[in-house]
Image 1: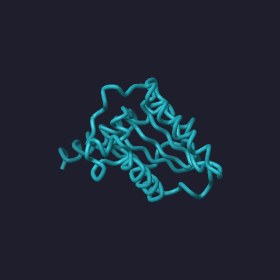
Image 2: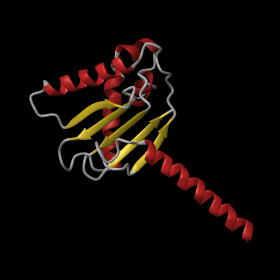
Image 3: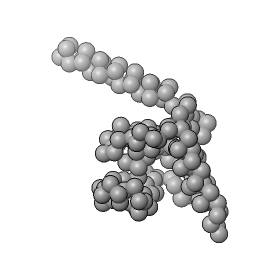
Amino acid sequence: MRSLFFVVLTVIGYSSVFSTSLHAADRHAGYYYPEPVYREIYKARAKQIATSNRKTRIAFVTSITQQSMQREFSPTAAIFAKGNDAEKLIIVGLEDGRLDTIYRARAIFANMTAGARTLPVFQELGVEDVFTFFDLAALMGFTQITITNGRNFTHQVILQ
């Protein structure tokens, strides 16, 4: 019984340290979005392309932003890259009530996957039916994707 107690305390201690280091490492939480409610790790099937770098990641989000700004209606989300190497992709909902559950966040990612699968790079690699938006992000060298409603919901995906 006593050894079980020490095992439980040890596990709780390691969990607290791990959780604290995750929170401490995310300097953007509390500034661009609330602390993540949900975190998950995605083991990417794609490896980073050798030519991807800070400049290509910024060009990617700039292109998406320009496309959304050219539509007839106001953008429903802002997308940008942060981090020393622009390795963190952040998506912030701009309208209340649209991006406020894990299910809606996953639906947005599913839509982004559908769009990514039409890209020539996926078709050239023959992975358009396998890779997801997360794999595209990994190809480009993103290591983290955060999606939030900007109020009280944040979901974070760590790409490995």
